[in-house]
Image (cartoon, rainbow, N blue to C red; front, side, top):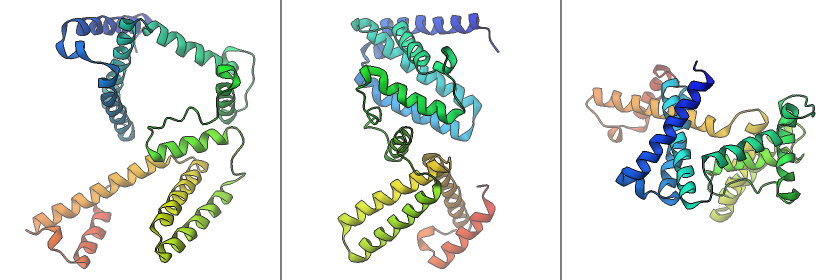
Length: 262
C-alpha cells in the first residue's frame, strides 16, 4: 500500500484539481449545495450497491466519487467564508477523539456494544447535554433505515428488549392485529398496523444482528434473477409471460429457483 506521504500528495492533488475545475469548468463553476445534493445521494446509493456486491474495483471508484463531493462542498464553503476542508477535517478529528475516550483517553470498555453505548451517551453530552436521543436521525432517510437507526439509538440508552423472544412475540402480535384490520376492511387502520408490523420486524432483525435493508435488497436481487430467468425461458419458447397460465408461471418460477445462483 501507499505511504502516508503519498496519500497526502494524492489528496493535495485532488484539492488542486477541484480549484481548477471550480474556476475554469462552466458546469463546476455554477454548482451549489442545492444542485449537488441529489447527485450526492445517488453516489451514496451507488457505493452501497458496490459494497453489497463486494466489488472492490467499484467500491474504490464510488469512494472517489463521494470524496469528490466532500471536497466540492468544502470548496463552496471556502468561497462563502463559512468553512474549508481543514475545518471539515478538524471538526471530524475532534469529534472522533471526544467520542473515543477508550482510545485517546483513560476510559475502559468491554466490547463493541459498550463502545456504541458510550458513543450515544457522548453525543448527548455535546451541545451542553441538551441534544435529544433521536435528534440525529435525518428526516430524509429511507423508512427502513430510519426505523433501524431509531431502534438502535433508543437501545443504546436502555430502551430495548431483554432478549429477542420478546421482539418475536411482538411481531406475531402485530401480525394478528394487521390481519384483524384487513378482515374488518379498514384501510387506514390496516396501513397503521402494517407499519407497526414492519417496525417490529426491523427491530427483530436488529436483535439478531441482521440489517433489514441489506436483507431486503438481497431478496430484491434474488427475485430479479429468478424473474429474468422466467422471461428468458418464455422467450426461448417463443412466448410472453403475460400469455401464460398461473400454473405455467409457477412451474417456471420453481425452475428458476433451482437454476439461479441465489
